[in-house]
Image (cartoon, rainbow, N blue to C red; front, side, top):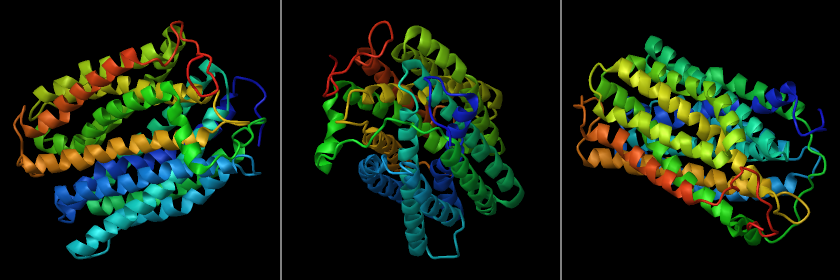
Length: 442
């Protein structure tokens, strides 16, 4: 294992760290994109039931994230450090993901319990691994611009994982059917998870001089991030921006099937979106370096609205137009991947008594991110059912599904942009503000 010796990481060290983002993204996409469609159309559960289960499991998962972040900080000074939680996470994540898409023949009630238990395991493993993983990334460098490079590299590998998770299940489902295709995909995911974890744990550079924070009471430790004005603003903006992204992510398969009526192109559309998200990452890194992270993020939000609002006007057969929407909104998505986590790493500076409580900060951050997905699924799916939408029924352009899929996210994203405009996240010249001991601007 190498040791960090300068502000800029070598390409090999950067790739080794970023590699674990690939299986994490491979696990995340099928859960919030394929699970609603699989369990409603193939297994007969109602959209309202699925939405309620997703919401309940996400809420439970979100509550555990700050505790896992606190535990990660407690382990950070030990020999294996945060890597210990990454390794522990492999078992529940692998077992839960396999169970989620390998469903035995069960009645409706038992299927509901199976879905719930599988999601609990997946979320536990994902949270346990990702919080320590993100905290490790924040500790790799204290350089303002290098952090954006680190988060961009992680985002690029995450996009690669998403592309795999978008294309491979779609291809397997076309050959075998949705249920069998997703089950076979789990056999692709498991070895990738183990190999990526081994590479990241073994070859990510050490971070010398990062002792565990002093041990305040757990309630004090969990409340500490909220003492920062900048952190509260970042959380508020991220909640709104995340909800705006989570609604179409939850509904895209229904939209492609029942509005565009081209379900066979779902994998292609998802692939374009995430491919151009990765392709645009260097642009956002350069823009953040030149204009500041806040301005770059704001531009990404505006681009996403301008690109995505046109999805409301599309209808049957508009595949090329929607592909253009995916390309442009994918470019905007790159800003969401690279910039907010980099801002968060800046905010952690100045906190802690004798160490950096990165795990606690990222635990609360991830809790918020999951609440976004929970709210999107828990509200959008029952709302669609209440408004009369049934999966598999073709919808006219501008109908119920199009409105919730396209217009609602754009409205929320605009509000997020307005909040970001006023958020005190960095100084005018884009430099990281000096922080006082409690995290407020000095």
